[in-house]
Image (cartoon, rainbow, N blue to C red):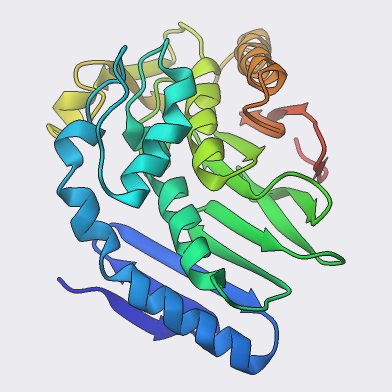
Length: 281
């Protein structure tokens, strides 16, 4: 299947190739926006084939040796996950964010744009210039909050992980939304924070990842397939574990902020970006 590029009714650019599905929007003069969309479309066709060629290495757990990778997206994935190599993680934990980062650079290269973003299934790379801002929704059961990003703040990436998403999760979080310097960094950190929102309880059903998907990079690790109603104290303990992991990553400068949700309850770990929740629960 070849890459598909189309314009949505509202003018945004839609790029799709296999599992990669991007929504791209740029703001500026019509001429600059059109040139930017042309650059992104031209770059997009090579993204998936190059990644596929390096999948055996990308699906391998990080160890003591930095992985030898050739493609720019693959290298972004390795860069984002390498700081977390003390735990089980593969470069695949940052694939969606890394694609967004790479495509954003193709979009803005040489262009004069006020702001822009590339959204890969909720993992978003952001470009902002002075005086401009973007607002991103935080979703768990619905639109539960908003992150306000400004050019003066260091956040240029947002990612969300948790059970029920596109990838398997070791934890029980409904969502873990992370703001970081890049989308790839946010993607990797969201994976680990969502994994940390966890509890051993009879209401939590797990299965080996390889039983659900023989190609999963998680091998025989138990991933969450269902979570029943949990006691409030179990929910609180699980969220506290996730918040502790988010604070740890923030101390090391790997994330800016995080918003974690489980069964209507939330934890916020705030940084330079503005995070606010709607009335929930």
